[in-house]
Amino acid sequence: MYFTGIIIGVATFFIIGLFHPIVIKSEYYFGVKCWWVFAIMGIITIAASLVVENILLSTLLAVWGASSFWSIKELFEQRERVRKGWFPKREKR
Image (cartoon, rainbow, N blue to C red; front, top):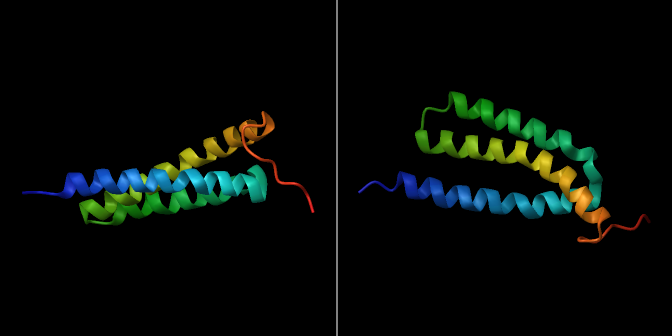
C-alpha cells in the first residue's frame, strides 16, 4: 500500500489549520504591515519545492508556500473582521 497521498492530505490539513491562528495573531499584534513576511516565506518555500526531488517534501513545501500567499489575503480580510467587531482589536499601550 502507498500512503503518500494520505500523508499529503493530512499534512495539508494541518498546515492550513496552522495558518489560521497565525494570521489572526499576526494581525492582532502587528496589523497588516507584516504581509511581507508571508510573501518572503511563500517565495522561499515555493522555490524550495521546485528544487527538492522528494515528492512528499516538495508537495508539502508547495502547500506551505501557497498557504503563505493565501495568508496575505486573509491578513487584510482579518483587518476587516476586526473593524466589524468580529474579533478583538488590540488596544495601543
